[in-house]
Every structure is written in structure tokens, then in C-alpha cells.
Figure 1: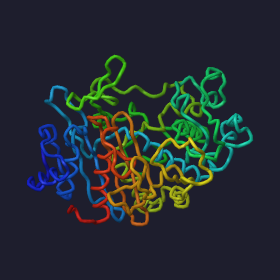
Figure 2: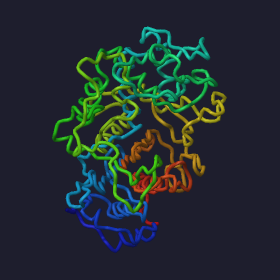
Figure 3: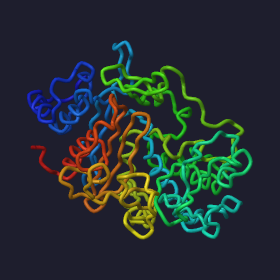
Length: 459
């Protein structure tokens, strides 16, 4: 099924110019292309999906200009039939496990509680958790919500970041009970507030704080505070999705297999499901009926477990670009959105400690969001397009074969969203030319930003 028309000669020329000619096409030919899209951009993205031995399972893309959606395209398959007969294409209704973009969405939930003065950015989190939370190597320094959101809390993921329901995250932080003598979650080198180190565990602590002050399970709070008011289909617990939505969740894929304890990539082999293959088995609820909110927010996967579609993320971008307003109604306080865009940490400042930077392309962070500073550097820069000249704020995701990005430039009121549902090759062999992104991510972002900024599609 194809909606709209595509100039196939133009598509072939684009494929050749990108080095994409000679790809197998039958797998993707059934992919719909929106009738109102720019045909050249749609063809370019479809060709990126089919690079020789560089295949992607699926791709969802949206571009916003002046706060409105001006391009939307879905390519590839959200579910791949091993027999090759009944693939299910990615569509506007497809929901993805968006990995670390979940952290940015969680930060939006925090904004609602800051506006209500139920949380305070610079208050010692000990007062919320009821125990003295300290990095034992720097016992005089309080840990704050701002530090957790900006990855400067001195927490580390060395002891894990998602724990069973019976565990209390306080025991994790204090190394007591079952966690006594376990590997420390705290940095030995950097005091709280002193250095940046990307940390998933911080999100579990944030979710626990949210549960503590609201009395609600984290996923239900997010539904009430963020998703329902905006009319967005999304969840941190897919077991609670209605059947109509569950059947649209994308399975994430890789083309790799484990042999003799070692994983090997097979670019010419079959797609292998990684997570969310609900054809094989339905999702299991993340919590039991006995779960007590405020004990262990990591259980709801605030660091990476959000299922949401490209349009849902685009709605969140629109609200942020509109300074917290949605359809004339204030959803997020604009002053707190300003904090999201204000640099809280920047590379090269005296607050950066050697050896603590764990995400090479991070140059600066705002409140719960990465700030892309237009820094060129092969393997570690944050250029968002060929030639540079663009700054943005947002978040990236990378897990189980998925890579994703939600990015916005508030000054120009534009933004892009992409969700890629699986890689058929080792991404480490596809490094970027001018940034820390993979090359296929550079190609996708460059195509989308040209549309967002009304630049010519000609190469």
C-alpha cells in the first residue's frame, strides 16, 4: 500500500548519490509514504533505510517548522514475520520503546511538580526520602534534584539501575541490607555537583521522589500529569496498554547472534527480536498489586522504558516550543521550561573532572535535556547537520537496536523526531563523519533539519 506518488527515477538518483544503489527492495516496497510529504526527502529517508549491509528495520520521522508538523514519514516494518509473508509496517500509530528519551519525558513530569512547589530543585533529596543520602566519599555535600536531572549527582551505574520490586532504592543508595558490600553506586573522584557523568540510576531516584511526594505509582502519575492532558498515547508499562494500542508497539531488532558466549553481527542474516515481541508473548506488568509507591521507582523504567510514538513526541515538542501551552491551555510552567534550555553543565568548565565524562558527544546539559552546542569533532562532536550551524536542545536514545532523537531549536521554533527500530549491522562500523552520531543518524538528521529550516533538498 502506497499513499501519494514518488518519482522513482529521482529516488534512484538519490540512492546512487548516497551510495545506496543495489539494495534489496522487496522488504520495504510495501512501506507507505505520506501523500503530503516532500517526495525527495521521503525518498532519501527510504534509501537510508536500505543502505547495503547497513539496513534498518524501521524508521519514524517528523519535522516541525514554526511549531507545526510539516513533514511526517514512516518506513520499514514494526514487526517482521520470519516467514516473510505478513510483515507489519511502521505507521503513524506505531509506538516505540524510545530508550533514554524517557528521561527527558520524565523531566517534563518533574516540571509539573516544581510548578506546584511539591518538589524543589535545590533541596536535599534526603528530606524527601526520609534517610540521609550522601556520597560516602563526600559526606558533607547534599544531593539535589537538579543534580539528578543534570547527571552531576556523583551517582554511577556500576551497581545497576533497575531493581526488583522487593528492593528499596534507599538500600541501594545507602549500601545497606541486600546491597551491603556490593559495588558502590557513588563516584570516588567527583563530589556532587562537581562533574558530569551520564547516569541511568538517577532516573530511578527521580521516579522514587515523584512517587514519594504524589503517593502515585510513577507510570500513573505520568499518565495523569503529562500524557492524558495532551491526548498522547504513551506508557511506562506496556502491560496497561489497550489491545488496540498494544498491537501497534514496534518490536526492536538486531541482526546478531550469540555463538560460544560471543555476540556476532550478521548483516545478511535474519532480523532477531530484542524486546517488545508481543506476538511471542504478551507484556508482563512491571509491578504487582502489592507495590508500594515511593520505594523503588526504578521498577517502572523511567530511564528508558517509555513506549510512545513519533507524533506523541512531536506533541511534547510543540508544547515546549509554545512555552508550556497546548491548545491555549497552560500544561507546563514556562519558567521551568526556561531552566531546561539553560546550561546547567558545560564541558571544559572547572566543574568537569577527568575521567567522569561517559557520553562522548555531550558538550552541555540543561535541566533533564542535552544541549547541542554545534561542536565539530569526529566521534565525539554534537553537530546536528552537515556543515554545522545549528544548536538545539533535546535527548537521544540508544538501546536494543533502537536509536532515537527528539530535538528542538526554540529560537527558530523548529524541531525533529526520529525513531529507528533496529540495526542490521554493528553500528560501531558506521561511525559519523563530523559528530558522535552513527553515520546513518547523521544522514537522517541532516535530511530532517533541511526540511525544518526550509533549506533546499538539492545536493
